Length: 329
Image (spheres, rainbow, N blue to C red):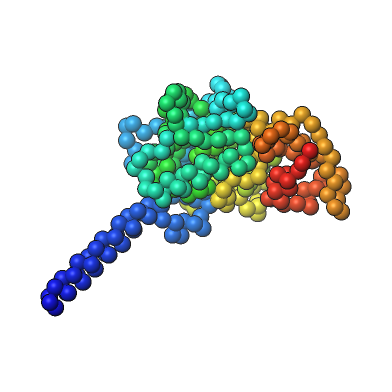
């Protein structure tokens, strides 16, 4: 009887140990140990360093932008062709996606959270693929984190490797590429805001600092953009490859998710906020301010126009967005 009890206890212990190991494997590569404190720029650099790429992998430029051939390296697809995803008659932009089945449930949840975040501040709605879709994002765990810029038609791969890429801000970063956005340090006006120090760049990586004829959507250069790389990106000696100007002490490249300007550019590019009316809203103890307000049932969150500069000193970006959602015509 004692032997039977020992056997049962041993079997139970083995079963519990197996379950524990399975749970560890389920969390696996997306476990957010020390990585939770890293910026998107740091996560991308770490995930894409020392990659062993196969013949089927796309060419990468700027660290994580996929291109079809070397001919595309110096051309921005979004300026040479229509790269925007198409808007539906209801004013929303539906982007079909497929998530490969090699992700665990927890990993899929991280990806879906990133996908669904866009509909909370824009007219972009990522939805699962349906029969009849002719173009879609195929989210796969390939080599590192990467995406093509803008809509390319057909199956369009967004690589989110299980090891290193499954973080909310990283998912947003790659999806912004797929929606048509380049890196902040590649902006057409970047030389007015950062100085690139090519002497500190790894040999052969200079192309990562090319400028693109971006539209910028009327927004200022954003050091806090989720698309801004950190100051030592592609450095050969751990010295800065980018320095802010005129103030070299400005902190940048530390974003962990999309900034207010990232959201504003997205709404502008896709015309999520075409508001035909203007209303004057008066906040207590402040001057009157003009907002653009969208009318109709369940409108998208509208981009607003502020006529008084002092308003920016009254509310933070998060408060602005919150108040904006509360506005009524």
